[in-house]
Image: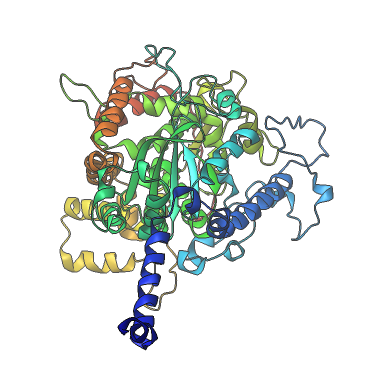
Length: 591
């Protein structure tokens, strides 16, 4: 008798409904994996990134067509090494913007005054950049099939990736060492494009993923790919803990090594876009900025990062020039640039009885095989600086010659092509050593790095705080109203530029910038990768560290150990060229 009354009561209906709702939530939360990876959710998470990538591909094709040399001179051979790189001619593309003049095309990456007028905070979309081709020297051309294979790897992550690039010896070749044999491929079942690209030697492919919200990204990735993570995935609130470890220690990046995606063995690092932009602009750690100072393949672009990376490349060029004599070769310049991020790196330190955990000739190996790629990055910047110029008569007069040279020779080959322009040493250059011009370069160094340099010379000059504080205040890039200041060197900067020990002091500042973040990042890797994968990574690096260059003379001085030895090895090659260099003054402009 009581059951009908209970069933008719409102409380019974409410109780049953609540229990049904809770059971439904539990069933949905613990649903099978096959129901989790639905096409609808994957499409919803990636639609924005896919649209951005399609826009980037269209812009790349337009830029590639517009930067080709004009067809009027019959001497331009115009070879192409990438399939599909010229599938649509410029005549088929409607001119959405005014056509650039010939004198602007080769140096189109740096419009006048852009450094003093643009702020990363004001750039939120590509249309905010000075023009649609701004920074396209950063986009190194590679085989279209291999590039598509790399992009397909990105699509296996449902968590949104806003900026991505592939780098390292798995993408661009490095010169072989004499003891390197035919190693087994690390890839379980790679696509044919990856096999063809790495036929000179299969290597793990390294990626960096730039994300907008670190904790949200790891939360999504932990759900989709929990096996990518170490035991940290079992911590309470694991995504928050992993995000905190990433952002608070080391260089602000979280690596997952030895991960198989689409049959390819990869290592990927996750970094917040704000952290990446700050390091590129200010050189707070040089950990990420140093990787982008060398040829990389950008797979997804971001307007703010493109702007900051252009600043980063120009800063690397100026820093290298401050460390070089009046005359030098391209190879010496690019070895200086490539060596910046290795000064102070604990992997380059030589431990008695153990050696180093990195190949001691790594810098020479990188530049020795990738000189055309460095050319594409830095020749447009060199031609815009008023105090440095090519003095080699072999330099072509064609527009965008460095782009064509990179297309012909850039690849995964471990040896430089014998027909590369200028040979293994490249072309010769001359810079103006006038303190006024070099003082302007000092003033335009990255903010955090420049402060270290200023404090070094404050100590050397024995300047009191009352005299130094106004100099430090005047060196701020932004005024109190938030406007960008015009950065010109004053008396203090010119005095720094005239010092004979500038090379050594700059090297010391680079080492102090790199050392601590790189050391903490190395220790952090033990926890983020897990003990097993961390030991495997260390063992692989130790194996490389024991290798010797095939030719010590060609490797820029042989074995290098730490920042001093790294610098010494590159200086030996510079001294060999000083006697053959021409003496020339700079152009009558400000840097």
